[in-house]
Image 1 (cartoon, rainbow, N blue to C red):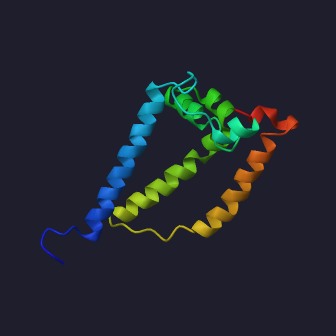
Image 2: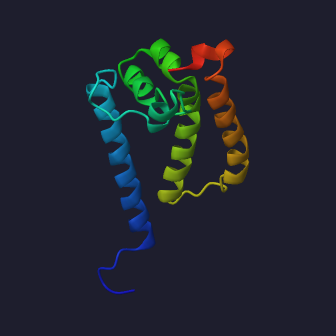
Image 3: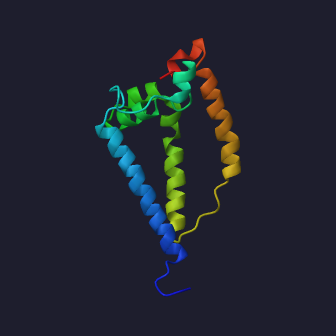
Length: 137
């Protein structure tokens, strides 16, 4: 290792700080720039092509609603996103602990994917069927 070369721990901390800064920027943007106002954000390409809602449709509006304290509207915009917030926080805390040198047992990403992917696909299909129209953004 050369003098002045960043250590692996320092690089990880810088990456974590960059991720936090990016997440904070996105949250601030969606808080102060209402996605319901036309022309501020690009439309969902899947929705534009098919007229159907993808699993992510309504996520920006849900984020804005949460950032302004309107939980009921957030649930109406994208229930799956709102329900996944505790999971995002859990994964974020685990990653932060690892970066800070307090390793936790490895997160079972394969198990998480085996659960998350079918849930996302099921939500995608249900929100585009008549009996579950309330799930559509």
